[in-house]
Length: 558
Image 1 (spheres, one colour):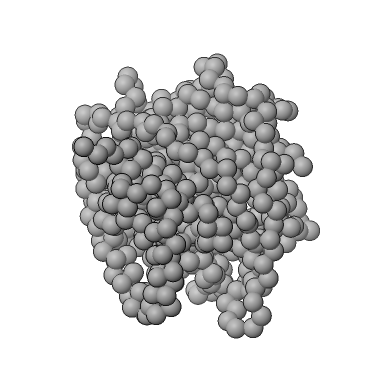
Image 2: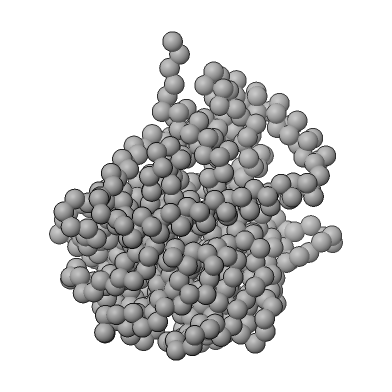
């Protein structure tokens, strides 16, 4: 009787999930929180768990079979490999199948009707949206009536093979919306070779979490690093200055464990989905799947538990002054909390779908985004939004105000990023160069009102099309398309001086890009998919949280 390996089994599970429509970015792939249901047993699972579970088989058989195709587009869909092929054929046979079907696929693409494809995609997305809305309603009831701890999903063992294949990295310099005219300039950067790899002597692996680590953030004032995980805990790590200690660090004295459930730590509802430090670095706020926000001291003491939401918290932010905390939830609302009084000050109920992200404009006004495609700008004390931005055609995953609070950037599953101004209703820029959902965006710490006022303000957008794009928001043009990842990009972060950008992906790699040259200057490959990357205030260390339950701290020097 023929046997089937775990890699092949996971591949079949991936295909099942993919064909069943489990591709919704804000929920399945959310590194800041999301609502997922396991399609097998129906249980709730934390952000990133499905990704961790289903991506095991892809990089082994499919990527190995495609290794010889150096000129192939690594971003393309490998749907021409069938599960039966993977089970019955070896790698050499798969290569022959790929070569034959690749040629046929290219011919079919040339004949394909673009209009029909877009229509089908729209119908699928609408069906997904309706299904997620129904799931969210059920999840709200579960959070309210939650009494019994649920069995936590078992940690997935890592059986992936990391290939030593060199990638040819292209940086495209193109103009926004340019049709016709000269082809975009392609700059062939140096392949990822040994000199670019960050050596293990410059890497500290922080161990202790027992489930995927979904969020991480450096304290703005010191050497503390916070991480949040699906194991119902957040941790505060003390990271010494200077060179990192090589290897793994699992000394319990190295971290404070912030438990979000008493007793057993396998209660799925207490997964930590998001966290944020206050401006002074004295308090850490965490958002959880149980709908509660918690405020902790740097000593690991629970200072406040804030309860009013009726669904998981997706996003959480301190205002600059530090007197208010803002939370956004699946219950379709946002709440401003009075931190000193330890109670809610105002609840904003303007969305018709889960609130996916929130961001302060100043100390009293903020923006919210939702699966309902809308963006609302609200102000404490006002009972209606002071501004509403409509223009996205699908759920808005992330919103960010620029350093001066005058421009708002947004990104969506509709594959676009947009720039909005309080002075007008319609967007002032509409960036459409991405080909798949855009998961997150970040502003550079440059331009007026920053510590780098003589450098141009830039917006970075990270997409499931495996690229990071840098935009000149003054003229509304694309500066660079950074192509180096083999999978979607979940997180990007600018260095404090605005000269470098770090990006992290489920392909297990962290790339550090020079914004001056538009190319990779350093890279690191870990042992799991990456959910978030962040720089410390000095700009000499980068932290990343991984799906294999670890946090890595990289020393960065040029």
